[in-house]
Length: 216
Image: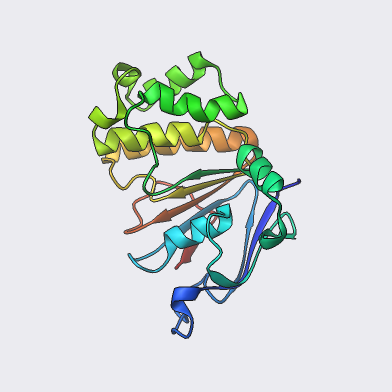
């Protein structure tokens, strides 16, 4: 499936049905995300940024309107098509990270990479080193700080082919230095694949050179 565009067409979360959404530049509007570009979605807590990410990734369907990936209404996609999209088309970093605490940082990343074969072990270890986790490669995630866990989750998200990288509050637990490091790594990986980056943020703290910014 060719994925070069994601369209959000008059989408309204079920929880916001009947609400005044005139301040939003995404809800109840028509928005396009194109491969190769950078998008920053600035939002206050409770305005639905995590919902939007889940809708695009196919985790949730509690909305009206239409979302299209590669021209296809996502509601029409089969399980096999979704598996293919999630393996080769869309990479996703959820806000809650969804790491396995009983596994090491390397093992968490290898779980994803084992499905895609996108990186070698040496490349994974190098990426972990780039984000300051060279000494945590074999540490259990449950014994790491939230900021360290967030960096592991970002590396894991990058271990696949993608045309769109969706990052839900990717630097909420990072200081300025690590924020900049992550921004550089994300930009390198996205540029190498000609991919788009869609990042959500509360407080506009993501260091992303955006082609377009939206207010949710």
